[in-house]
Image 1 (cartoon, rainbow, N blue to C red):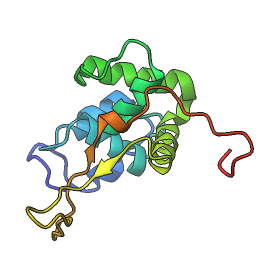
Image 2: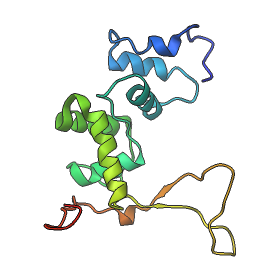
Image 3: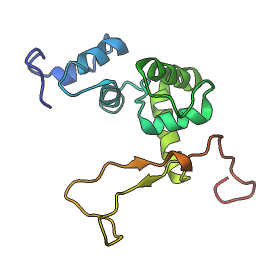
Image 4: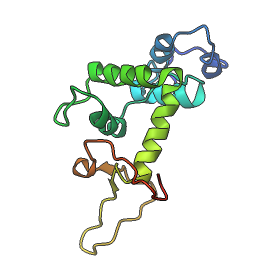
Length: 158
């Protein structure tokens, strides 16, 4: 991790795990790193620093929020205010483990194909490109249902 020259030396990242820091203080510290914004800071805090009450909000979580939250529409952009609104929705719905709840909901949405990913096709051949680095997934918003899907009674998945 490339740190700014103002970041402390030593076990800096490990020191962030301290429970005496508030989530806000932790996120402020992480976003001092060059190139780290709120979503990445929330990911690091959730998955590496034991902050189970943080929810990284990205395009996929935005798509889930569109299904469950009132007052959002797919034409609006993800502003800081909306990010906080989605975070607060997860906290009020799932409590102190809302970060893990978001991960489970995301995995379930992928499994049910409610969030569709596509890879770019190469020119001319109709085959998918292979590259040394993975391509950034694209979400096709038209494939995402607007309302929760209920499992069919008696099906293997329900």
